[in-house]
Image (cartoon, rainbow, N blue to C red; front, side, top):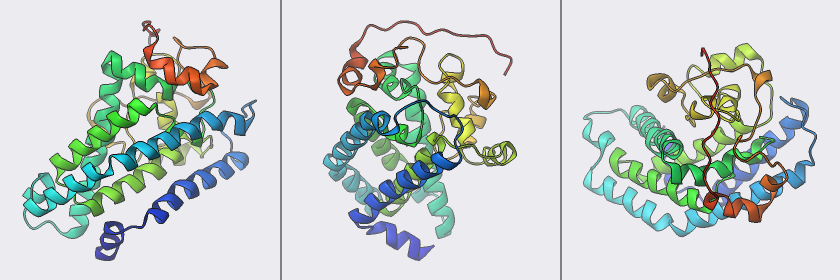
Length: 279
């Protein structure tokens, strides 16, 4: 564990880039052999806006990295934050708790708030207006959302007390997890269900991308499914019943254009449709 922590403390930028590209490549290939849905789309054309937003996210995170590194260094030096206030934690528990809590603040809480605050939802819905969810959808975030997510992560580092090694470990796991859960792959149902007791599984997250409420407002988790189960936001829906997109922005062609997506958060808000469910 000490070697792992030391590695992520000084992980080269090249290695972080390889995690991003390697994950995308792996799940892109798996989508061709184990597809959940047989989309009638041009895969590269569909990927272009999503890759554009991946690039803007990288640029924003890189530009703001000084704040993240500075905060992580400060909490480490001052022993501030939750994981630093628990005495005699073994290193493995220190790392696990750090990643777990960063996942809560930086992912689950951020995601939940984005769905509940209308202006933030209008920014976040760019992610939801993809009608063909695949691994490239993972980083389809409007630049404004990238800033919002970064702010929550920064707050998480401060409250949790995570040193930079734990931050980079969390970000790497988060990146691969979100590529995995968005990937258009079909796992055996029993395996997917078993995974969902601990981790967010592909089927579990796909429910979140169903086009109508209440399913859209469920399964906010990124790495761990514990938060959805703990706070009552976990829902199930048979994978064959899932329809991607958002009912208030149904134009698939428009939702595939970068210019339209950049302006989408500023459109007039219309209340989404809600359906009754026994789940």
